[in-house]
Amino acid sequence: RLGEEISRVIVSTPMSESAVAPYLEKLQAEVEEKGVKVGSYPRWGKNRNTVTLVGKDKAFLESLVADVEKNVEGRRVFKEGEDDVEGAPAQGSQ
Image (cartoon, rainbow, N blue to C red; front, side, top):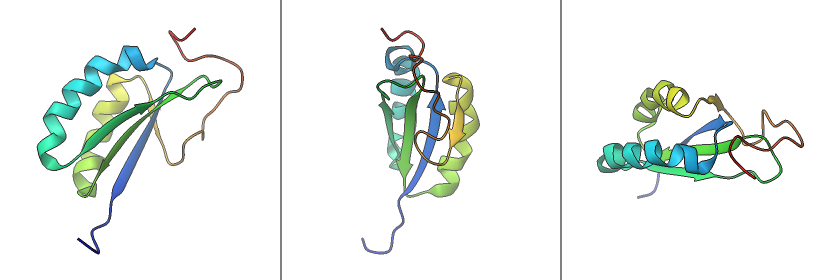
């Protein structure tokens, strides 16, 4: 439908995709009925990876931020790459 804004929350994590996968799978199962999509994206050549939550209920997405930050040992950023440190690999990536 036109006019429905899609909101996105980005959390930057030093953990590898494989390390965050079990938590993200559990989270996806919990939030799917609210129309939220959970994604994890490697950032090749960077020391951090990105977890993204996308949905139409911005308040609900915001309510998830603290839990996601805690479980992926990360922090919210407002654009991908905001806290990059060049050259160092993410934890657990080789």
